[in-house]
Image 1: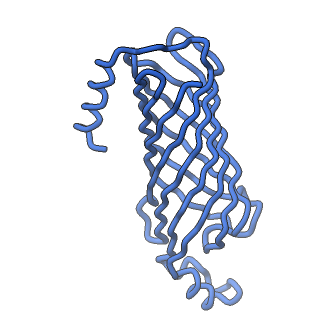
Image 2: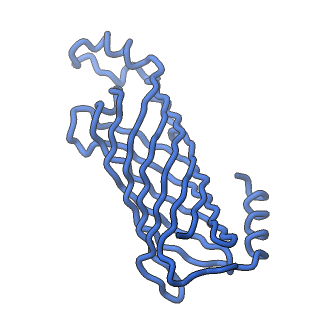
Length: 204
């Protein structure tokens, strides 16, 4: 989203009356779609698109901030390709066969359950900005030169903007994401990506 579009969204949200905010309501449920790609490097490509269920639970309200627990089951569809074949070193067994295998474009599915903590700052009657950090277990179905198949973790750090109309909250969330397995499996170089999410939530 460019700066002009973001400014238009902010202006619209600041002019919308804040209908039916229920201070006793602690739960919001919704969906999000996101996409992204790797930070520029010479070793690999990685593009992804993903779908999330979202459950927000308000932990605490203060005069300036709101604090929330966030649960986000996620299905991620990624494409990955090794660019630098020398990333697979000659001292690795069957390195030539592995170079040929890993340099092919691969489809990767990732199943993630992110658990996060969110600090929100209202900026207008109907809008807010927030900081979100989350981490969660992940299963990946494809081995690559950077990450073993199976168990890993997904870490996300995001800055978001929300606009609430009646009981529906619209959400834009740029974020960075790191995937690795904390050394629990042989291959653990992982991936680093920049992404953006678009979502909405319903007050329950």
